[in-house]
Image (cartoon, rainbow, N blue to C red; front, top):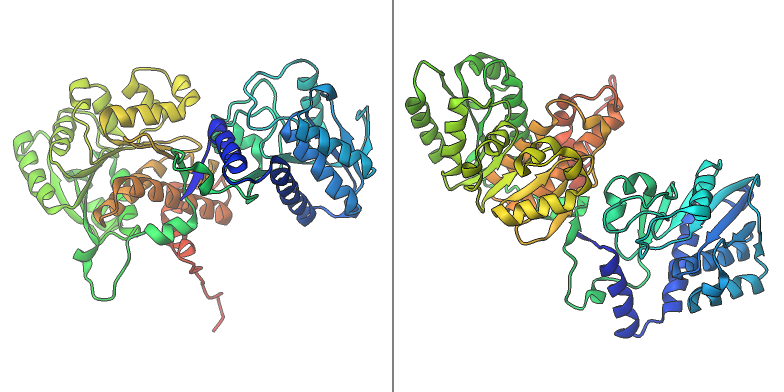
Length: 514
């Protein structure tokens, strides 16, 4: 899995590469400039128009000066603009500035009203931590208003590398070319919205530069899915791929049980049993005949008889999911309590989380072997705070909850953050705004249960499951557009998402073809 770094981790990598491996700062700067040069060259021709390189006084500015020189030597029309006090330039930035000037790159003093086709942002790098105000803020706002393609060097100026927070004002890039590793703030919003397309380029800083101090952040790629997804073998049967118990759906809420159970099947699970109220039986049998059903009747059988049926289902299952559409009544509370104490790997979603947030003693029974999947509102209730605070501290909320309770925390937002009890975390970069629709959370919960039933470790199941879920959503958006998407579209794309990750595109014959 690809590492994610914060500003201090990236600075330490730079320092270690220079001091331990003897690669000079200027050599790294030249490689960074070449990386940006090739990314620009692949998208933008000499005839497309003038380029404005806006460079600061730090080493990020030095990268920008070097890019401007390379573009100028390749025949592009380039102008430099440095709004900083040149006396405060770092040694490396000063040398790159002087080299650009000696090679004949033009420097301008006023950019107002000039028709640039591309703006290169090299004002601030990952070390920025103070708010941007005054003339520099006005400059960033002016650059954002210009009708030009915008490229940021390493990180969009004004974005905090550790969290994605915008520090007063920020450059809104169409493309960001970053070096070594993605930065946390480039994946989390609002930073992701300022980053645009993210290209991660190798400049000679890799995992060797950690010197044994690995970052705690990770993100998943298609390659990881191919490597970590449970393997299928020719000599096998349905029992070979696990048994998932889905406890979901109250009266008039059969859809939640359907989405979760079908998602478990489509993620590769061999057998799925749904434990639900009697009223859902006929609906689920018609919607998902592959599922095994065990039903109970509230206020007829009594809680004791329902829990006895549940006990038999728990003995049968390899992995459990409880919560989607379950309700929060007396039966639901008893069911969640029994499942928490079953000692099996368990996904808690939706109403199960609302029950926990209303019963702090039960919340303390969360344990190793559990995955919780709260959205922002559910997380706020679990923590006893408000949504705005959770949204402003996604990483902290997910990681601290996981550490305190020993459970994996899949905190769902525009970018899902997965906190692990050991302090490591994942940020999922797949998915889109079309998935902001009813039922998508039930699909994710079912995917996680299906992967757990197949024997995946909890952390890997959470990370891979979130990625596959988001990728299925991305494919649904490609097919239908964000406005017309519903959870069924995401569900139907799960097999295609797996095929794409495995390197096997799904091919359908066109109507009338042979």
